[in-house]
Image 1 (tube, rainbow, N blue to C red):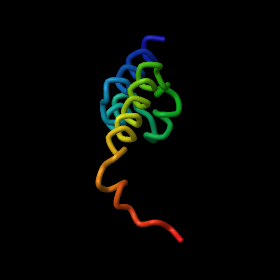
Image 2: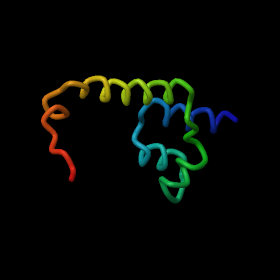
Image 3: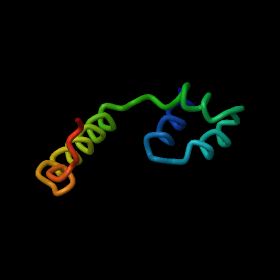
Image 4: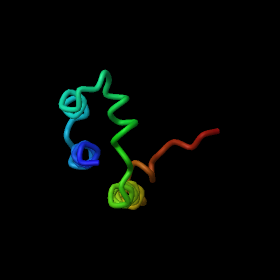
Length: 71
């Protein structure tokens, strides 16, 4: 359980997955992510907020207002 806790914190803390893989002694970064990188509710909230910021920021922008119409 302690090992899982630390690997999960590595992923949640933004540590590069190759560093976490090496520290865990895994054969691949994919394995490390599959086993230890659970999506945390806080991370899901932050991702949703980032998407919302992009959408809200683009509304009324010159890029959206002047985008070509598809025919």
